[in-house]
Length: 295
Image (cartoon, rainbow, N blue to C red; front, side):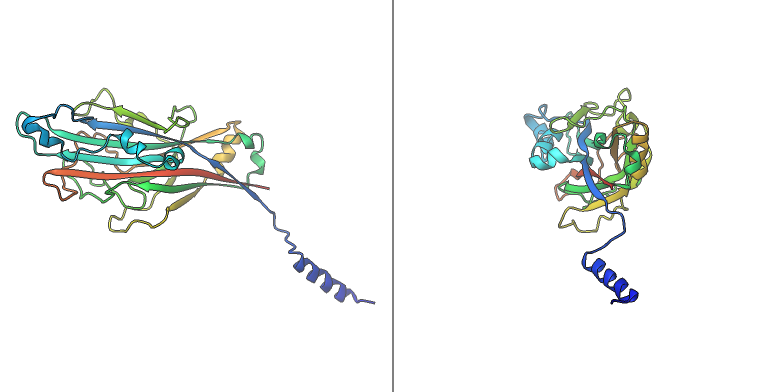
């Protein structure tokens, strides 16, 4: 007959062989954020007025419109990501009476996450994690030197990892966002030459919300990532709180470092080796997913 100690040992060995595990097992469900981008264009939206004569040179290097830039991205990037950051252009070679050619595009990303599969199941949520994946970055993505005048010294902070992305913020569910639309891009022309005080830019157009994640400090000297950088944030309480309130959607936005209170002109610090032309492209297209763990 086997002794009790031998029986216990046999059970332990059998449990090991059978991979016994008393720890709770969770399954992960990924809910993709439906993306949308709002871009406010300050300055010249086109150069059709520079068609000839001495003024034609002012159009040299004029960047693609936001829509053309967006459409040049791959379909998978456009369908799954939203853009945040800025593009700034300035051409100082403006002989009188030629108009000055400037443009500053301010991008902000929005996401709507559908939680309806978890309706009435707030007590089963073990963990929820927001996962931010950088799908593409701007062509230049270098940092401009601190600016003088009305610009904050960090107004154009940028790096090659996440562009000008600053913070992931939760926004009210009632806030209209462009998510779910094909392409997800909405372009607002603020003015035809200078900031229009009657139409405030993005920083004044959307209410502040709780900060979910702050991107690492910008490091312009850091080389670009060879892959797709990812950042994560714990959003368990946000998801559980929404479900407890019988809310089945949750919305986020990404703010940028390029959002001073008023931005009337493009910067005047050279960014490329082109005389009198400034071009700073610090945009990033970012995907947001929420990974939900349940028993």
